[in-house]
Amino acid sequence: MSSEYRKWQCIVCGFIYDEAAGLPEDGIAPGTRWEDIPEDWACPECGVAKADFEMVEITA
Amino acid sequence: MSEHSGGNEPVVIVGAGLAGYTTARELRKHDRARPLVIVTADDGAFYSKPMLSNALAQHKAPADLALKDAAGMAAELDAEILTRTRVAAIDPAARTVTTGGGRTLSYGDLVLATGAVPVRVPLEGDAAGAVISVNHLDDYARFRDALPDGGTVLIMGPGLIGCEFANDLAAAGHPVHVVGPAPHPLDRLLPEPAARRLQQALAELGVTWHLGTTVAAVERGGGTLRARLADGTGVDAHVVLSAVGLAPDTRLAAAAGLTVNRGIVVDRHLRTSGAHVWALGDCAEVEGLVLPFVMPLMACARALGATLGGTPTAVRYPPMPVTVKTPACPVVVCPPVPPVEGAWEVDEGGDGVRGLYRDGQGHLRGFALTGGRVREKQALVKDIPPWLDGQAASDG
Ligand SMILES: Cc1cc2nc3c(=O)[nH]c(=O)nc-3n(C[C@H](O)[C@H](O)[C@H](O)COP(=O)(O)OP(=O)(O)OC[C@H]3O[C@@H](n4cnc5c(N)ncnc54)[C@H](O)[C@@H]3O)c2cc1C
Ligand SMILES: [Zn+2]
Image 1 (cartoon, rainbow over the protein chains, first blue to last red):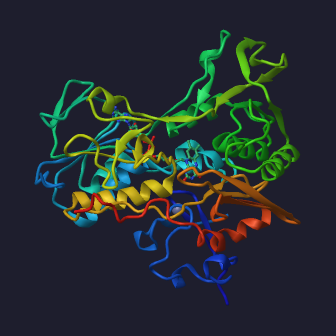
Image 2 (image 1 turned 60 degrees about the vertical axis):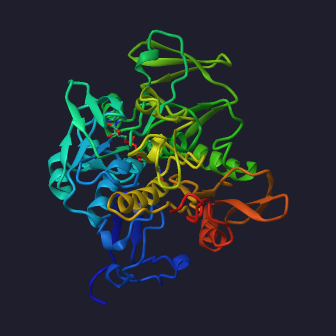
Image 3 (image 1 turned 135 degrees about the vertical axis):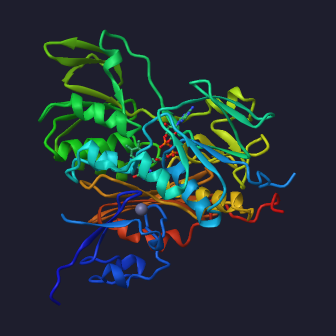
């Protein structure tokens, strides 16, 4: 594992997906990369689809 | 009359908030050719409104929140966007709208996405007019301009938006006072033990609560504002923020003779009482439900985009819990929708509170979670029936 975990933010509602933490309650294990999240996944806060590219990488 | 027979006449959308823009995006997934005009009273910048109440924590200035300007949105959506333009009137019979500047636009279909207007409580005092309500990026920019470094903020209204601003401001080092008539914050959404956790966590962050009272007057004095509370207390603050509530903006619809109740009345297809006039978002009342949150409006926008694109689609609401952005005490609440007689069953375990709201038959109809127990959301939501299922008698 060379690269660090990143965080992604939904531009519609501000929800932050942290790769390190994952979303265990949503069936996404800690450490899951953004690329590896299924295409039919939707933002848990606002329902925006992953396929709509509404998440942007943030540095925090 | 067919439900989407606007043909190739333009779709005109009034409002460039999340409801208006998402409808436009969804329409474009189904139809790239139909002429599309968006008319908005603001500058048409696309921004995430929920981020207004946690912008400080994310080190964002108001200008950073505007993700795309109107020109960028017009290019993305193949739309004409009329900014800083108010729609003054609708003529449903002639299928036209008239702008404040006197321009008349014809529509095949008209989408009302006019949002909500902040409720204002009458106040005495020579600075009553200086009270700021934040329901738009422009309001938020004015608020931040008025707020000096480390300045004190008095927030009227311990509801969702009031608590979120209190958390964001206090965490950034601003002294914060919150005033409201209820005995606890988020009084209408949370069982008392959950509300007390939130109240305590925000107090530990530096929020001073003035509950069971209201602001009577706001006056100018010595470079700041001075609020006089009904219980006699005086509070000095640099800015007074009103977050006492939002009411659907039904003015245009009402003036045009469309049916209006709490919001603009629409059915599961987002149809108003007027032919070829649709509504969604904070301004709308969908089958009796006024749900001024992002998730419901996204569901509506997906359905309406499909309908206007030629595939009549009824909206379906799953249960949609709301996350309150108070990191000092995470809160997730799933209110009973539609409202139902019932009682809270509260479990106060170590790292948070779990409230289960059950109806008379013992069925789970809502829940409230705080602290570490917000993790239980996904499991609980599975047991809640849909708020609005898509199988309507009006289908077809
Ligand atoms: C501070 C804050 C935090 C929030 N946080 C959350 C959250 O965490 N999660 C959540 O789900 N929801 C949250 N909400 C609610 C959510 O942001 C709103 O439900 C949503 O943004 C409403 O979008 P809308 O498009 O319906 O309305 P608006 O964004 O209000 O858009 C209305 C549009 O209509 C235009 N308009 C109105 N009248 C006219 C006219 N006559 N002519 C032309 N244009 C007109 C306006 O200029 C504007 O462009 C929050 C709200 C606020 C204020
Ligand atoms: Zn989102």
